[in-house]
Image 1: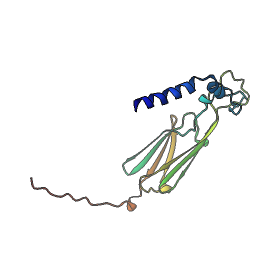
Image 2 (image 1 turned 90 degrees about the vertical axis):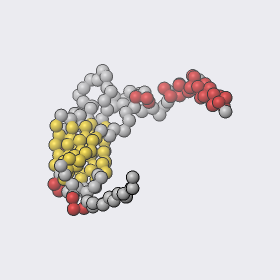
Image 3 (image 1 turned 45 degrees about the horizontal axis):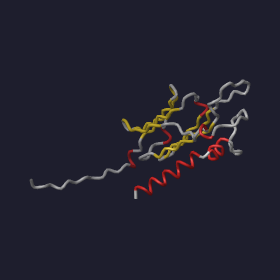
Image 4 (image 1 turned 60 degrees about the vertical axis):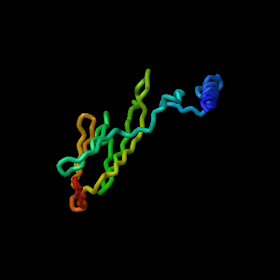
Length: 157
């Protein structure tokens, strides 16, 4: 059994050592180009961007903290309903009149959807941007929350 796994590994290793394999990757005619028309290494292509987020409850509010470095309030949109928050925006990194010597940041749109653990009051939500963090405060809709009684069986010890 272990010999079969070793043979599979060796076959795979030989495939990656073959010159044709790497030539195909780095000379692929369908490779993408950046904003300046230059070929881009497929391993350095930006992954789909979704900002990092924390969601927590405190004092009857759900608080969402979303990292949006470099964005202003007018660069993002926030939509809230009773159980969902959707944050969309665009990171703009290309300067139209600039002569670039290095271009690693790309323009890209993003969308982040948060499913809330319980209903909120959408018309009472507030948000602010400070130090690259969007903070959304959402009051919990307490009348829709249901208390479920917990019973414990007594044991005779």
